[in-house]
Length: 112
Image 1 (tube, one colour):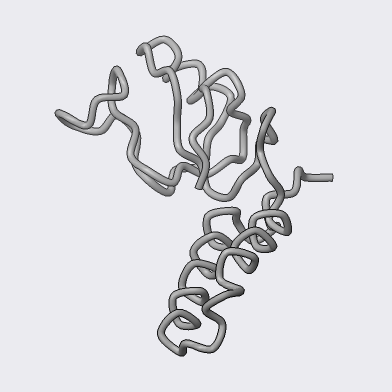
Image 2 (cartoon, rainbow, N blue to C red; image 1 turned 30 degrees about the vertical axis):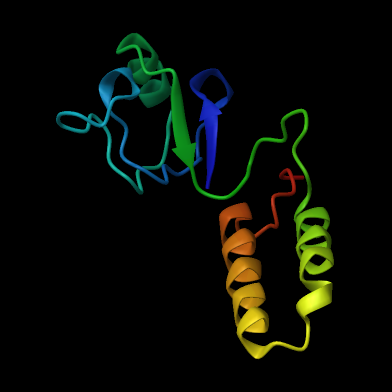
């Protein structure tokens, strides 16, 4: 899942969270999680003042973003001193799965 400015949203991206007016979760959602974006929907969201949306995967590479491989390498480096502890190994597995899932099936690589 990635939070992106609405102006970077593109048709065919899928919302990972409900969208609320003024990015405030108070009130009724104006667009639901799992909705596939279209050009007209993006225009309507812009007209309603929505500034950003959460989309599935990691479709937009922004300055400072790290690749999936970089994140997993850093995570492994952080756990190297406690590698023998089985509970820490379980935590490492949880973190690896979480990071991989947040980056999406494509590992956060831009679409070709």
